[in-house]
Length: 103
Image (cartoon, rainbow, N blue to C red; front, side, top):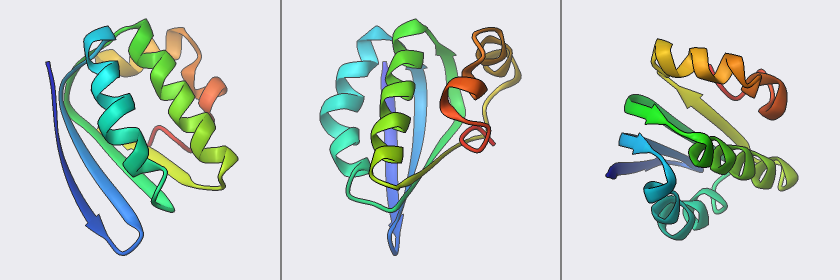
C-alpha cells in the first residue's frame, strides 16, 4: 500500500511517498498525484520511506518524467534508498530519465 503527503511552496510541489511503488500503487499515482504534478513547475518526490519499486513502478516513473519534461517542468526524486538505487543502476534508469532527476 502506498501513502503520501503533499505540501506546496510557491510553484513547487513536495510529495513524500510511503510504502511500495508497485502495480497496486500505480493507479493511486496516475489518478491522484499525476494531475497535481502537471500543475506545478517543479515536483520533488521524497523516496525516504519507499521500501520497494517494481517494474510497473519504474515504468510509471519514466512516464511521469517524460510527461513533465515535455511540458518543460522539473522533477527530482530524492532520498532514494541504496537497494532501490542499485536496481535503478541495473536497469540504467539514470540514462532513461536523465542524470538530473534522481539526486
